[in-house]
Length: 378
Image (cartoon, rainbow, N blue to C red):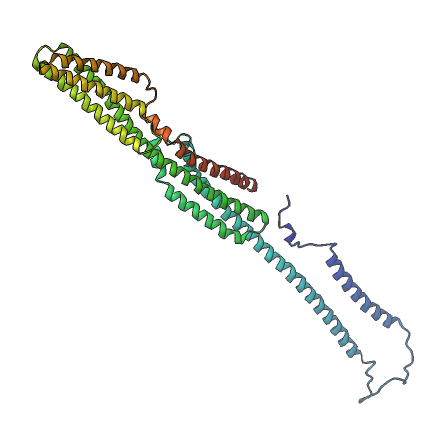
């Protein structure tokens, strides 16, 4: 297969080339002309010398018939011809040598460019080991299962951004060594790919930071609801004690247990209300309505116990009716609670998360396009 620099190769044998034919023919013609003159001179008949035109100088010697002088002039002509051939040959060699030098330099610059370009591609490949993890974590960034993994990956973002910025700077610097429009276009795509990866990381970091906050709130909401369930258990226990109470001491124990249930419910209500303040869209209305009605029932149960201890049967009966009414309403409200408080929290932050997801998606599309162009270039 022909190489890109085969035209620069020197050939030691160039028989039949135009240059060889030119020099050989000229040399042969020159030799033939001299030989012909010698033969013509030796073959010509000897004629009597004419005195006309014969200059006799000092010592009776003719400048026209001086044989040593003719030989000297012939040698001078041959020397001048040889020098002309040598100068021409040196010029040709110099031109060829210059071509080889510049050709080698162009070739070396191409090799250096390719090496540096592929080093940047290798850097992308290394960076993408983490980008693949980021991409998988962005499928559902609010889930709590991968919370720790998101935190670990986020710790690498600063290093990755430094690498990407260095890649952009290196690609910009390498553009001064670009030899073709394709080179420059590829470097432009490389800068675009690196910048878009930084945008992906920025969007992911925003999503992961939001996820951490949302999951903390969701945990608080879940903990509060668990307290509600625990309060219900304590309330049932208190109701059992109150139904069996036949003495003052047993009535006091039942009342105190009811108060314990109320305190647990009140703490859960405070926690849910605090979580709801973190984001206007968090809707705990059903949960808070249930808790409020349950606390209302527990207050009525405590009032019943206090009336019994005061031996006020009418007040006790009235308070007990209020308890039964509130307890029935609480049971009805419980049936309308179909979603966990944690899901309410995540739903409320979904629109905020969507901004990060869209930014990530746009940057990802840019990366996909730029990477495709780089693969085509390679």
